[in-house]
Image 1 (cartoon, rainbow, N blue to C red):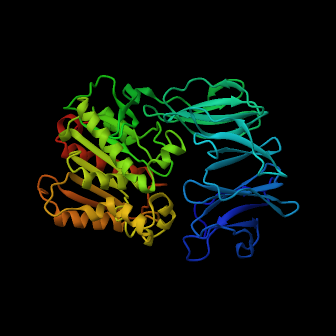
Image 2: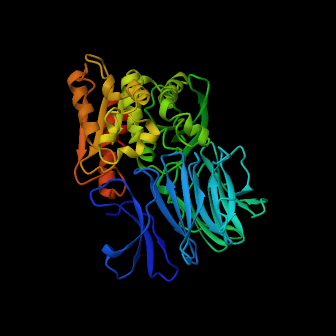
Image 3: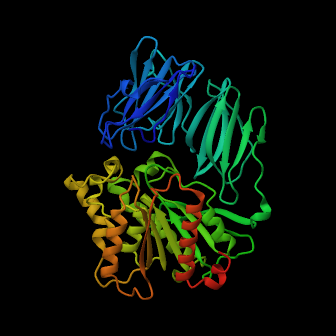
Amino acid sequence: NTRASSIAWLPDNSGFWYLRYPPDDAYNRHVYFHHLGADPASDELVFDALPTPESWPDVLASDDGRHLLVSVSVGWSRTDAHLLDTATGEWREVVSGVDASSSFFFHAGELYAVTSRDAVNGRVVAAPFDAPHQWRTVVPERDVVLARGASFGDALLVVASASAVDRVEVWSTDGALQRTLDDFGLVSIESLDTEGASAFLVANSFDSPPSMYRVDEVVRRWSAAADRSLLPSMTVSHVSYPSPDGTEIGLFVMHREDVQPSAQTPLLLTGYGGFAIAEKPAWLVRAATWCAAGGVFAVAGLRGGYEHGEAWHQAGRRANKQNVFDDFHAAADWLVAQGMASRDMLAIEGGSNGGLLMGAAITQRPDLARVVHCAVPLLDMIRFPKFLIARLWTDEYGDPDVAEEFAWLHGYSPYHHVRAGAEYPSVLFTTAEGDSRVDPLHARKMAALMIDEAAGQAERPILLRQSGRAGHGQGKPATMRVRDDADVLTFFAWQLGAETSLGQRL
């Protein structure tokens, strides 16, 4: 009865804290302790004081095992935290009931956090174990977003993000910036692991597979460099465009160096816009393949994400969700207006919350693009909490059982805005029978309704592909990912009439 569990080991490896669910319950995730060799049925319940059944606790232990931190995500904009002294059994409240997100780490005998509390762009705070609620600021809020922090010898490593591009800074515990690590370019820091005065970080980018670096007094590449002979030279630019309300939205654009984007160039646009997840530079095999074949790939940093901190997230959630859709529509319109795309050569795609984005694009702006890939999507926003673990997401979207929130959701719910006889772009819905997050019923019923109602399907077919023995996407074997990418890219090339320019190379 464990799922997506964090683990906190004792220093002698004799046991660990972990998360477990009651039998046949998708919620009420509680903290247990397991002694190695013991019957799991006898594991001790350590923490079950959840504000709501949907709350999501995680565990973190100090290096000496003396303190256990239980951080509890309550929705997507609040983190409660409680600290256990494992020697005395005493619990101390770190923070509770405050609408702010925090991520914690231990350093130099104190509890540290990167938090949005009283700092929408984030700050680093510290507190003593005997009074963990008494926070003091170590790294103040600035005009960059603080994404994460870690202990680094006597100092701190802090990842700071400017418009979704990361850099790594070294700070002293008295709040002095000691140095900024070498400029890695347009990258995101995918992971950051420290031990003493050494750290390993993984830098991710659009134009090359991730690279691992070791950081101590100097920065050294730890993994082998990518074999550039297998990759064409790419150009990646970071621009911005205006949304209808005047908000500037970031946009990454990637293509081969010898390609000049034009109205005749196939362009693939994607976005996400939700759950405080920033769309940062990342190695995407599908995007690299598309660009290698001569296409253009673009990623929009929509509101609802975390490209500009918590205020950016709030601007795209709940009653503000329409901002996300408007931002995405504006990206496509701007690319066309700039002569970098045309409607007939434009493909759009998104998955999960990004699949909802695609559903909104299909029903609100059927003229937006020629072809759509809508993956593992949420599409019926009136009944979504009834299936699988979707009650977790009512904090982000709203609860259809609440009259005011029903109105928000019904106002854009893609399934409820399919019009009989309307002409829509060609759509490939993809889902998986084993998806434990988003029920495949969303893709199935939306595809069925559109097949029944949409005009012009001889030229613009509506298709559904359901995978067996697969889930929401995490952990897919390489063979399945290759097949999926080939199917989607072939579908795009076919519908854009680009078989000769792209199809032969894909």
